[in-house]
Image (cartoon, rainbow, N blue to C red; front, side, top):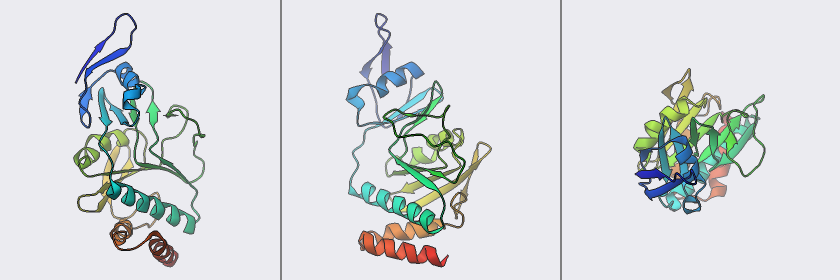
Length: 223
């Protein structure tokens, strides 16, 4: 990546930019790119002086499994009467420090400062970070498990799931004191077995949403 500064206007000018990888950039350069119409469809991440813009097209596999995970979390919270607020493809920003735009983000429980509905990135200086973050990917899995995991460890997120589309595995991490460890059951959605989420994903190849939802409701009610 090569980014040079326009001394006259003080804005970032992009000469060449490699997407879907981490590249060095200042916070000012990151903001200029995030506001560039050329990257309107991109997903932006910033961590410790490194920038990542994801521009890869998303196919039906991503969209389908995304919807299944969203349903599983929402239905579980509903059955267990747990307060939950979901955000999809939303930017969370701590000015000058970092930014992330996960596939799914959930505020879970009471007493949280949940942001209102605006068209600006969520300011993490003003509002709480999401409780649970979910990333879904195939070519990005190594990064999802790597630097993004570090980013979420340092952002106050309590739980992080990575859905590996290649093997239909959901890898869940509980985060505390800036460190993460893998768990087989959610801690922020108590006793939700990650294996049940994976089973719902597998069922999505043969069953429609109504059948999957009925199975989830029955399973969660019995738990």
